[in-house]
Image 1: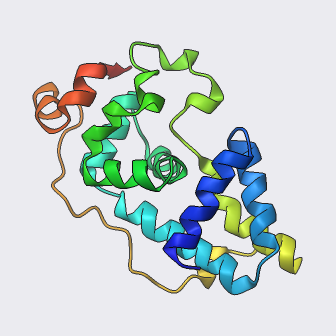
Image 2 (image 1 turned 90 degrees about the vertical axis):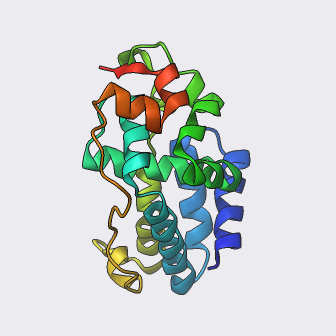
Length: 187
């Protein structure tokens, strides 16, 4: 599966299904009707895209919005970015501060995170399991680690400059629009 076909599926899931659980099932159903190489290809593209979003600056953006962002939370956040669709994903990967312009983020500003509805959370953990679920449904093999079937693409490494997300001056300099929307994070 190439990147164009991947994005076509992601964007079709947003049009055809309402909510992340329904989108997940929609994607699993479509992938399970394909071949094993296509399912593995979907996982490979997902890993490539989430890997491209793995920067300290992006992690700082997630931390700013969420108030605190763990390793697992950052994985789920990057999957959510992919779920936004190609145009938004590309804009945000090029400039994480562009998250401040997205309606999905703007509607969270000024609200306590405990008041956010499940669908509002900038996280899509289930997207990370789509290929594994589709593989299991197609082959009947349970407990398959789909990641083991994806050709090694190199280890995900944060290659940009590490910085202190909690330092207000650094946050304002690196993520000015997000810092304006979320001045103290959501702590």
